[in-house]
Length: 218
Image 1 (cartoon, one colour):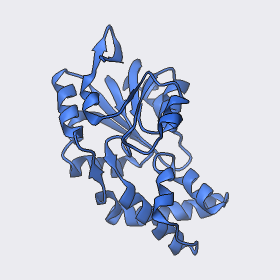
Image 2 (cartoon, helix red, strand yellow; image 1 turned 135 degrees about the horizontal axis):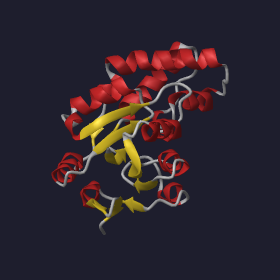
Image 3 (cartoon, rainbow, N blue to C red; image 1 turned 120 degrees about the horizontal axis):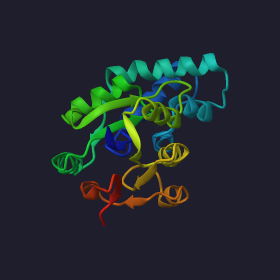
């Protein structure tokens, strides 16, 4: 049973290049104007279908599904590899593993893409499972399913860089920890009342288990 539940994008790795280029590829393929890449950073973290609805102003499910399909066309070929591992992540994961801390991934990204990214960086073996999202699936529903299958318990800690990560944990009665090296601001994270907020990746290695509850040790 995993004790630490990690978001992927903005928490383990920086996916900005692959995501922004794949979003613009999808938009242009469907006749929408290309967006300035810096403006797309805000869409890293939430579900892809929700992001395309905000970008285009379109609510037609078929059109949104077509945009997601074009995005994944490019992302599957090259976008997933346009990804950068945050400095210090491998060392932090190794530190946690040596303390016998069990870990899992909960990402809005499709599970097969997440698996390719973890394998790309040689860190897939640190995680017991990958919970991936899809169109119409919210992260809180993913955590709900993980609890139902006993892959995690109510004592597990969700770690992520966006409000959606913390909200999903709290909806299910889990504690959550925000991280500031990703795409969420301090004010965004503080608004969700996390158990802790980390500023450096090396602080992940200080998360330890006390009396069946995962807490920060600092």
